[in-house]
Amino acid sequence: MPDRPQSALVTLPNIPDPDGFYSELIALHDGRSAQDSAALNARLILLLANHIGDRDVLRAAMEAAADSGHAR
Image 1 (cartoon, rainbow, N blue to C red):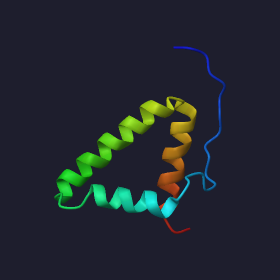
Image 2: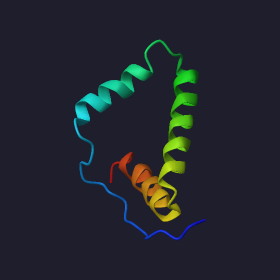
Image 3: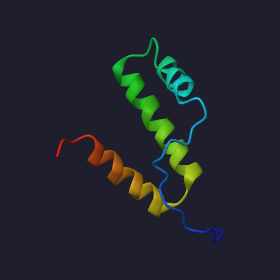
Image 4: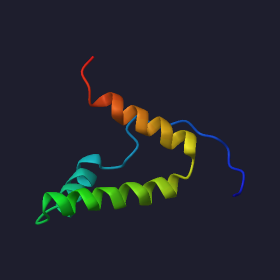
């Protein structure tokens, strides 16, 4: 595996047209059962994780996602 500089998880808005992206993401699930949507989400997560490829960034993303779903 080639050496790449380590990078931090980007949590500030970084997607052009975030509302448009969200609409596309929701449309991707139209007409799918809950089980098919969950499987689609899993495939999408694995594809994006592979694209990112940085284990530290992926770990930080998992921690941030886990923390954001709970009230403190």
